[in-house]
Structures are given as structure tokens and as C-alpha cells.
Amino acid sequence: MLAQFELFFIALGFFTRLPVPRWVDFTPDKLGQAARFLPLIGWLIGLVGVGVYWLAVQVLPVDLALVLSMAATIRATGAFHEDGWADTCDGLGGGWTRAQVLAIMKDSRIGSYGAIGLVLMLLAKYLVLAHLGADEDYPVIAALLVAHPLSRLVAVGLMALLDYARAADSSKSAPVARRPTSAELGIATLAGVLPLLLLSPREALAALVLAALVVVLAARTFKRRLGGYTGDCLGAAQQVAEVSIYLGILASWSFT
Image (cartoon, rainbow, N blue to C red; front, side, top):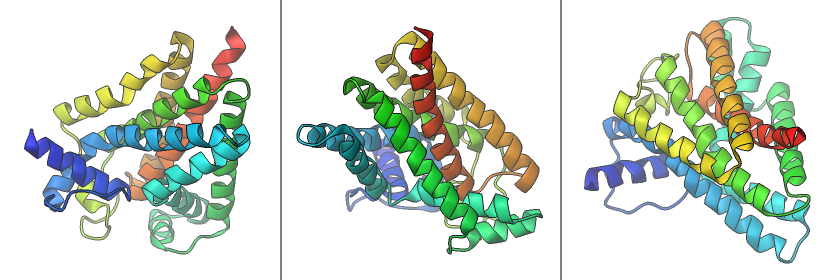
């Protein structure tokens, strides 16, 4: 049990900017095993977003509360996934060959594709959450608590389906670039789908279908363009899945 707690804190330290105990021993092998807890990390990030939103909406309009909530989740993760999305937009948008795409994605500078993609992603996230919270607070709270774990399960799913596209020693994400075992995938799946109980059956089905669709489309795209995935690709898939889950919940309301 202590070993599992240590793996959880290793995942917390790698995927977020939240504090971890000093006794945690970071090693590449343990970091590779810690990916199983990525959806569980999503629970914490979702709670951060919900906590800031709930406090802010007591005294501020919904739209401002949502901006503060989004800012809090970005701060909690160090914009880890947003950075991956921007780099992936730059790479896939500006590169023709596999080598070009990988080189562009590794560049720390942001280009036109990345800037446009990041603006549109944040705008889409804000707008769909604003619609979810137009009448009452619970839909936003439930959506945040569902989308953060489930979208991170999408990233774990891609790790299970694809090979790592870079050389093992060429990226800071390389230590987590291993296929999860069946047990690890089971832990991640349970943590990713359990929050769906917060939604109605129609909303949960829409969210799950769109998350699965992101896995399929992302896997096909990354396999064709890169021959596998990178850490940036996982961040990009998480961001696309998160917005898709919000959109699925909102779209399901049309079928009442």
C-alpha cells in the first residue's frame, strides 16, 4: 500500500505543480508505473476547478467564476497539457515529414498554429462551460469532475495502443513512455469512468462515446504522422477529450 501511495505522489509531482511529501523517491522506473494514477490526478484537478468555481460564483457572475476556475486548473498543472496541445498543433500543422513534426514539437517556442490552437481551445472550453452553467451550478460541477479524470484516461489509452515515437533518452516524458499493464490499465479505467455516475445516463453515454472517439481518431493521426505518440501528443489528446466531453454533455440536452 505504501508503494502505491508513493507511485501516486510521483504522478502528482510529475503531472501537476501540487506539493508532494519529501520522502517520495523519484526514479524513472517508478515514474513509468505512476501513469496508472493519471485519471486519479484528474480527480484532484477537477476538485481544484470546482472549488474555485463554487467559491467565486457566490460573489461573481458565472462567466468570471469560470475564468478563475480555468486559471486555477491551469496553474495546478503548470499548463502541462495546454503546452502539449500547442506544441502538437505547431508540429502537425507546420511539419511535413515525421522528423520535421518531432523537431517542431520539441522547440520550446510557440508558432502560429500553436497560438491559434491554444486560443480556440480555451475559448471553446470557456463557452461550453458557460452554457452548462447558464441556469444552475451543478452541471458545471459535475462536468468538471467527470471531464478531468475521463480525459486523462484517454491519454492512458493512447499509451496502451501506441509506441513511443521518440528515442528513449531524448525527452523528459520518456520515463512514462511504456505500455501500461492490464492491471495498471484497469486501475486507470476505474478511476476514469467512476465519476460518470455524477451524470444522467444520457449525459454519461455522450461523454463516454466522445472520449472513445478521441482515442480512435488521435491514435490514427499520431500513428500515421509520427508512428506513435509523444508526451505532447498525450497532452493534446487530453485537451481535445476534455472539451469533447463538455460538448457531449451539452449536446445530450438536445435529446430530452
